[in-house]
Amino acid sequence: MIKLSGISKNYENFSLKDISLEIQKGEYLVILGPSGSGKTLLLEITASLEKPHAGTVEGVDSSKIGFIYQDLMLFPHLSVFDNIAYGLKMRGMETSKIREKVLRCSKDLNIEALLDRSVKTLSGGEKQRVAIARAIVFEPELLLIDEPTASLDQKRKSEIHRIFRKIHKKTNATVIHVTHDFNEALSVADKIAVLNNGKLVQYGYPEEIFNTPADSFVADFVGYRNVYSGRIEENCFISGNIKIYLESENMEKAYIAIKAEDTIVSLDRIDSSAKNSFEGVITDVEKKLNGYTVVVNAGFEIHCAITASSFENMELSSGMKVFITFKSSAVMVFCH
Amino acid sequence: MKNIFVVLGAVIVFFILFPLVGMFFSVSPQELFEAAFDAEVTSSIFLTLRASLWATIAAIILGLPLAWVLVRLDFKGKKLIEGIIDIPVIIPHTAAGIALLSVWGRHSFFGRTTGISIIGTEIAISVAMFFVSVPFLINSLKSGLKLIDPKYEKVACTLGATPFKAFMTVTLPMLKRHLLSGSIMMWARGISEFGAVVVLAYHPMIAPVLIYDRYESFGLSHAKPVAVLLISVCLLIFTVLRIIGERSRYD
Image (cartoon, rainbow over all chains, first blue to last red; front, top):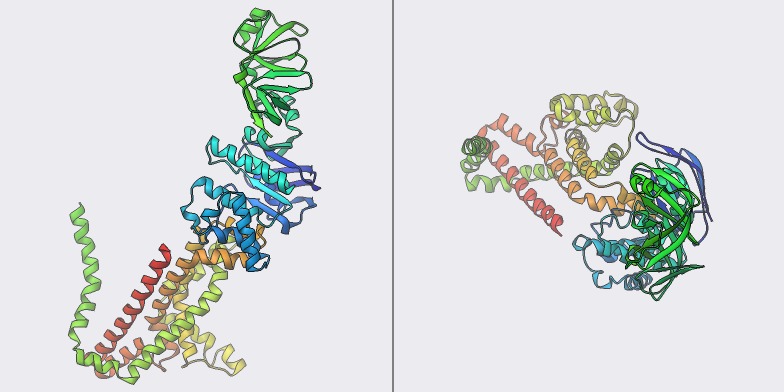
């Protein structure tokens, strides 16, 4: 287990304030926060690359850390092979063993054809894979990942997420992954810690973070309010009694998210092409800047955004019976 | 405007080139040949190249850490130290020679306590060259280091390198081009030094002192072939080094 206790560090324009976290062995933790919230610094402190002004880091063997930086920082004067081999060389491994390990790792990441190339000639996605290979080839116990997909398009992002999940499953390394992208967090995280202005504002399972945000910052930042975990079978999401229609391949474990804005609240059942329609009772009403969020218990809790005028026309209040409708295409799926 | 600027620029180029070309043409091949086989001339040219090389090597060993400290660390008095390093460039070199004499001379504290005097030796020549030319190397290393993201060293450390190994295996190879060009600049500046060297060591005579000596004793016609020979040797060496440097940039 990795234990950060009371980590603080002050810089002129930002600081980390009293951060405490416990990360179980083999857990995949995503630290989610806007840029400038001190995420990278927290990683560097965990890796003992930076010293905190206060607080301690326990349970980290600094010789068994793989660190993937946002800007990758591949060594430009070395070939792809020598970049990947660097950590093994520094550990004094024999040349033949280095070769074997680099080959195996590059095969796993599908970059074995690039080994003799200069890193300057690689594409963005290729560089990403080389940086990953360099960080995992010596089988670290702790993998630290800093904003890995910031510069990639959606397709490449999903590819990299898949790679991280695969690595995590295969090596059972503990992973701390920093990002500002909540889609990314849902794609990979076992647990999420939300950081704002150098402060840890919430820490928990993805459903907790998205559905019961600790404060308005978390709620605004994470964007979604309706996140559920379960399995997907034949275009149907199943979790306990919930059954939601969507379009997706089968998955053993998945997160789904429905934006509060994508739901329709009505007093009577609507006949429409939308496949998902649930009857429920309003349990809570939240006033928002541009309308209301109505919390409905329909066997599961769902947040629905409606405009102020609709809210007033329908004279909604807690305890009322309503119908919730949304299209199956409004359900976002995150493979896990 | 373009034409005027080209013409004004050409004035500088000709200003530099004209005396040099003129001197080359005023020396007959026979005179040059004689100078090249004059043992005093060749040994003084070798001495010049060698002494400046020692100074440059010493400056690389001491200058790399200094440049790293100045670029990578933040501390009070950094600007002052950077200013100190530039002093040799702005003071008259004969004055630099006198200042060095007061530290390294026979009657200096160092000379009196150790009984050792370097005055009039090859070491004294290297010391004088080091003093006047080391800013060129340090400044080149500094501008090179500023271009290298310190994160590379951090990454190397996460991969198991000690900070020193990270510097040697990552930063230094990336600094290669600036190290080479700074060393060439320093070496060249050392070879061309006269003022500081002549105060510390008139003998053994380095080439610039020999040229001055021949001019004073025998006149222009005896000084010129030596000057042309020295310039030719320098141009040849620096052209070769430049080519090597350009290659390393593109590989």
